[in-house]
Image (cartoon, rainbow, N blue to C red; front, side):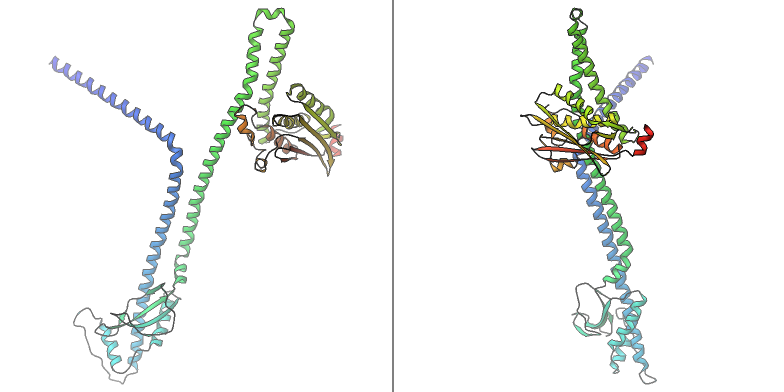
Length: 478
């Protein structure tokens, strides 16, 4: 008994081990399949999108085609009923003109010949032939009752050879006709009368109008959704590319000051530095300047975010341009590695703006002039100001590499740096692509705007427009 129980326990443990192994095996391969799908789904997405579009169009096409066939069969059925009734009524009219007491006898020996056919043949044999005009008139009334107002013709034909014997009117037959079922008028089934609908497009459109409109709207919606999906995918790819460029630029632009701070911190921890006060002061100055640099980058990001959400208010005041531009000039001359020349032509000595944000906006424009200058030669920056038409204008012009018309349309977008992106990957131009977007947002917050013009390889010029502060507002602030 104990041996049996032990054997059962061992067997159960083996089964549990096998179940666990199978579970882990399936889970591992399932995870691998999911990862493979995730890595390849971007490649399959255009294919499935195109397949979905083709399927939607095909389904709509099949649906409309089946509806067309159904309407065509209904028209054939209705025209057959109309011509059969028209022939019967016309025969009754002829019979009414025969002498009183006239009888027409005849019956079908089999089911292949309709009973009315003996009646039609008998009247004709008595010398009262079928009047095609009368049949045509009766058929016209009956077709209108069915809602069919297209052109038609009544024909008498030989049923076996389809040879035309007579017709009610002269019309050009086309390939787009609907032929009714023939009504035999001879007991040997050699001749019959049929009705042809000529180009019945009007009836088709009347009966399929709502369906075609609904199908078209549905198709437009499906195509619109797919196009929107494609646009979203393209936008997501662009955002991913911008995120990649932004991450690269952020790492590149923050790595240098962080490295300098770390290096200076290590040096300041050395006891020997205490004996060299000038060197210690220099290291502390580097730490402070690099910290300020990082803080400015962070503040720029926060400012743009607040400006975009309209949570930042500009505090306007009279800003003296010459001192402000002098500070910017000295800052860049101190750190520029190239010969840098400033030209100031200030027809307007002061503007109405938020001092802090205006100075940062002009700083960004000058910073771009230095960053995107030519590899060789000096950097020339010309700043002019004027007032006209209730606006204060500041123009910043440089002799840099310029930008194309294509870049001009997107140069104020966030994270956009136009043709500079390629060079940034080589480490030649650092930055987040936020400078011009910052300028744009600041001008918008001022109630103004910024424009740009350039010739590739010659110059770039940015103009800041700010509405002048009204005199009443100035007096209230004073």
